[in-house]
Amino acid sequence: MKIYFPQWQGSGTGKSIESGAKGILEYLDDPEFINIPLSDIEAGKNGIQKHHINNYDAITEQLTRLKQEINTTQPDTIKTIGGDCGLEIVPVSYLNQKHQNLGVIWFDAHADINRPCDSPSCNFHGMPLRTLLGEGEEQMNPLLFSTIRASQIHYVGLRDIDASEQDRINDGKIYAPTKINIDDLVHTLQSKNSTHLYLHFDFDCLEPNDYSKTYYQVTNGVKIKDAETYITTLKNHFTIVGSSVLESITTITSELKPIENLINLLMK
Image (cartoon, rainbow, N blue to C red; front, side, top):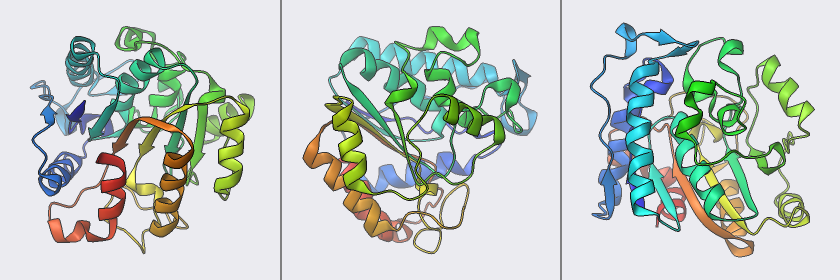
């Protein structure tokens, strides 16, 4: 199943995330991608915060729509063009229910593992992993097909972490090395009997000097060539059942040139 779901409301006010997702959709020019409509509920600077989550009603309405589409289709695999990182709670929880021994590879500069009450921004795109662990806002739990364990999470490119997130990473002994050794990651996954993987790819995991058209830019990121090597190696050793490309903001196709190989590796 291929999904186009340009959710931006989880970022608070970042509508550029929606237009960036459309840019990737137009680049791929693949009619197999189905569009999940976004909510008409007011969001952004006029959005309403509930449960310490900005734009709560808009987010939950459209994520409910996404869950219904996936539940109806019952796909074996999911590829998603997004959108902000908050959308991941639906495809990851579905594939975790569908496939035993799922490892979640989180290519991201940010940990995305805040509880709403701990989040400095109250933006949901910083909360999906905590939600997937079943430790987020309990009224969002019906959006989940299942919950994951801390041991299933593996970070790549992580370098911008809130103190409360670091505490959760430490408490759960979550895989989060300062620098990635791909052989070590493969060995770690194999030692956990992971056979299937979900590849979450927020483009801010990359070094901004390599690719800067991202909603956030964080220095000392992953080089594009290294990211390509990591993904290729993971594909060679495991069954990839889900992947996403998230939070790119350019609408100019030529500006996607540096990340073409990454888009193709993840979406084709």
